[in-house]
Length: 127
Image (cartoon, rainbow, N blue to C red; front, top):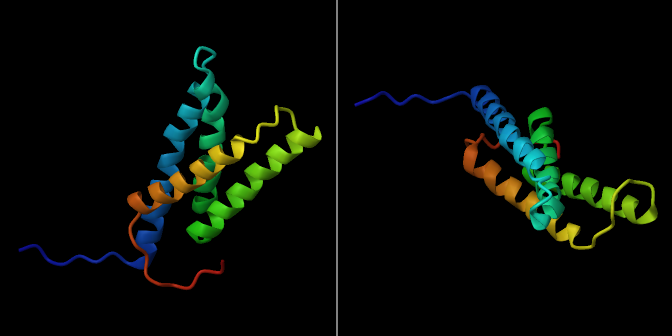
């Protein structure tokens, strides 16, 4: 029998941050590679899905915010850039279907985050 080894909350927190940080690398690579001119769907929506995902994971690594708050903030940020495109303040083409891609990216980020990280204790988070 192996002894029961329990990690401290601090060790779990740092392990989770590492897992989230490592997740950003393939997402960023996919985001860069999705700019393939031959594939218009991937070219159009690849960044719109991976952008909020990358934002989510970077913010989760840097801050002590809940998954729902971070996904909501990433969604607001992505939506703001899309609305800025419509108003002409941000370079790009306004596409209402991008909102669906942002939602897909934020939802996928939360699901991936929950799959790759260990449960932390029920310490109270600020947000």
